[in-house]
Each structure stands twice: as C-alpha cells, then as structure tokens.
Image (tube, rainbow, N blue to C red; front, side):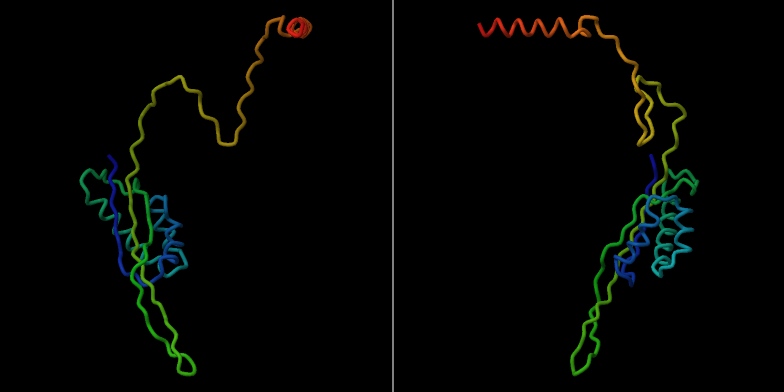
Length: 167
C-alpha cells in the first residue's frame, strides 16, 4: 500500500488566492521537481509552501511501510483554505476611515508514494489502445451475398407486395 502523508501551515499572512496560484504549479509533480519549482518561483508565498512541502516529505519518511526512496514521492494534493482576516482601520481624508483587511491562509500539502510497477500484465483479448486523437484502423470490407448486391430482385419484390396489398 502506498504511503500518504500531509503537512499543514496555519495562519500564513497571504491570501488563499495568491497561495493557490503557486500551489497550482506543483500539484501532481514529483517532490524534487516541486522543490525546484518553488525555489525559483517569484512569489513570496513560495518559501512558506516549500517549508510545508519539506515537512510533508519528512512526515512520509517517518511512516511505517515507507520504501525509503524519496524519489518515489509526488504531490498528490495541495490547497489553500482561507483563514481568519484581521480588520484594521486606516485614516482617510476629511475625518473618514478606510477598512484594511489583512488576510491569512491555511496551506496544506499532501504527498503520496507512487505504487511499484507490476512486472507483466496478463494477456487479454482486449485490443491495444490507440493514442488520443489517432484515427481507428480501417476494417477489411466484408463480402455480401450476390442477391443483396443486385437491387432488381429486391425492388421488384417490394413493388409486387405493395401492389397486392392495395388490391
């Protein structure tokens, strides 16, 4: 069975929408590619996501049944939930005040170990799958009986039956 582990960082001072943009970059990738992507991402929240990803990798290595190879881990799911918002007041002209909302987010990263490949699959009667967008192969034309090819016999028989039914 594949090992699954997750890590969560709560109350990170960024909006969930901004964090989601960076999380979309690493979703579904293996952990080494994800770490490299986060290292060169030009968003400030990428550093926080990198810490959460490293924590999830460490959690996976400590679980029972882990194969010991970090190369087989990939980011199964990652998401940012909205946390509580801090409301602040900013002075405005003429005695007014503007509200400033300082948003927070809860970041979660889940890693899973890739299943080991099976040596050989059983040979079945199913046809091999073709590539997406490829056209199916043309089938060989089947021979029809000679009587079905000639239209004279079938059309005259239909006409005679139709004439007999009307009389």
